[in-house]
Structure formats: structure tokens, C-alpha cells
Length: 67
Image 1 (tube, rainbow, N blue to C red):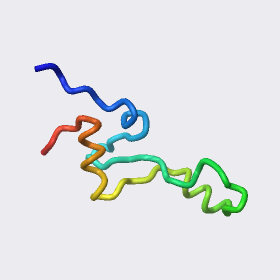
Image 2 (cartoon, rainbow, N blue to C red):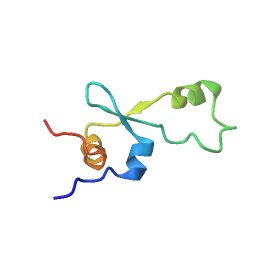
Image 3 (tube, one colour):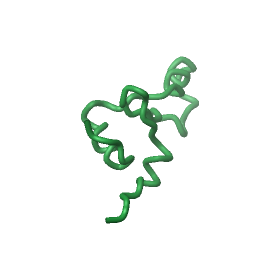
Image 4 (cartoon, rainbow, N blue to C red):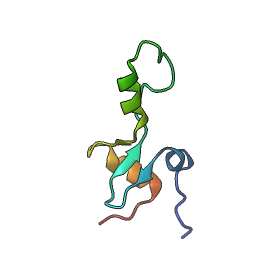
């Protein structure tokens, strides 16, 4: 059997942490920034950890090994 390929869109958008959590970007950061407070924009710039519900789907796309 050939190897499974990593999903190209997912590998550009998500990274796995050392403990196996999925890290990605926050939503609401690309436009309409004028009305958002500087504090909110600053917090949104930091990496977001995906919820436990969404993480398994992204791990499948990234080809992460199952434990």
C-alpha cells in the first residue's frame, strides 16, 4: 500500500504541540479590525489551542499517530 499523504491545507494551518494538542490561529483576525480593541487584537494574535472535540479531525488530516 502507498503511504497516506498529509492534507496540504491542514499542514499549512495547524501544528501539533509536544503533548499532542493542536495549535492554530484564532478566528476574526483578518479584517474589520478597526472596531476591535487593541487588547482583543493582541490576544487574537496568539496561537489558539483547538478544542478536544475538533482536534481528532485535524490530527487525522495531519496523519498524527494514534495512541
